[in-house]
Amino acid sequence: MLNGSCLCGSIRYEIDGELGQIIKCHCTKCRKASGSAFATNAIVETANFRFVGDQTTLAEFESMPGVIRVFCRQCGSPLLSRRPATPDIIRVRIGTLDSTIAGKPAVHIFVGSKAEWDDINDELPQYAERPVQ
Ligand SMILES: [Zn+2]
Ligand SMILES: [Zn+2]
Image (cartoon, rainbow, N blue to C red; front, side, top):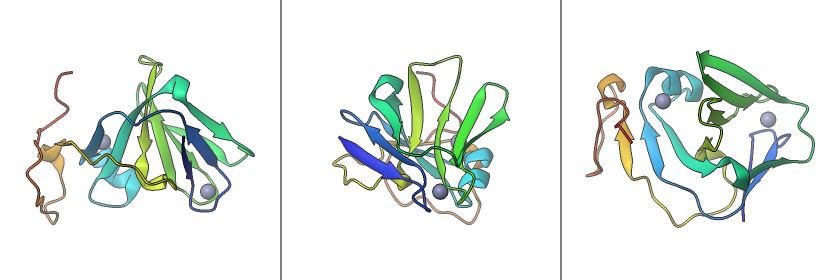
């Protein structure tokens, strides 16, 4: 089981099993939401994810129709995004993990909108937008 939490510790979560594919997303919305060059997200089956403890600072923002970003309203940590159209999976912001993991990022997406000041210095596949899955 993996554990994660927000910056202030008010929100904690657990993930059973392994993470799915780890993706670095350079889209403008992930850049805004993270305050950085990209977000690093792992696909997780919704059934394997749960918030634990007090969740009173949990908040949601619909950043575009059908995409809901879940964050801590006290400290601002982005925690995950979910899409009501695909309820079986969520995308967890793995910078919030407290556990160590064996996996590594597999791909860069939305490189077409990446920050011009950020250089990608690895050999992972790059996609201009989201590849068709
Ligand atoms: Zn917090
Ligand atoms: Zn993104």
